[in-house]
Length: 232
Image 1 (cartoon, rainbow, N blue to C red):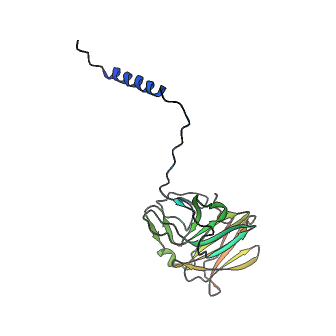
Image 2: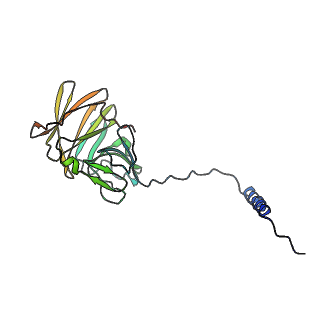
Image 3: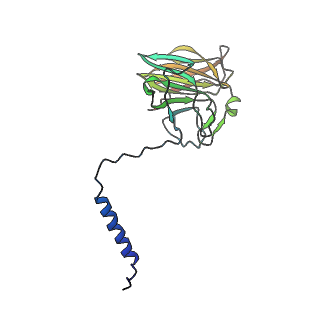
């Protein structure tokens, strides 16, 4: 006798019964959560997130994968510092953009956040507009104005480690807190200058001026609050 062809509804029900039968023969066990694959950098600017396709300010929080910490202290640091035993280093930027090109600028490496074998967790600052996605970097507008600078800070054991990106002609950065001023050394990297300074956590405002041969660059003085803290 010829069997009547099954309808789509009958075929669907047959498939469901078969799958339930197969599942019943498999011993239940823990299921590993899928690993999330990072395809690029996680970038935050100021106090909030920004879409990486948009040109960003100089300062960015960077979570990098799949590259892993293989050396602490990092090789060839520009500046080495310590806050109550917690070490940090300012180094030339050593990560690449989405096009495989080196990112210009410097990175702040904090020992407590960079454990051998884990992903790098650094803070990047560069001079000029930077878009991580699309591999766009344009310092031209900044280079036309020696008074232009930007900065950011990361918290290290109760102290803000503050970094600034300045014009290549700038020879020093003056930081004034509570009426007391200090000139900070500028380090040339990738055609710009970078400075690092420790600011106490309880400071609410600070003033920065950039200098060329000891003279303040007109229009460079800015009083800022908090100092540009980027949350972890």
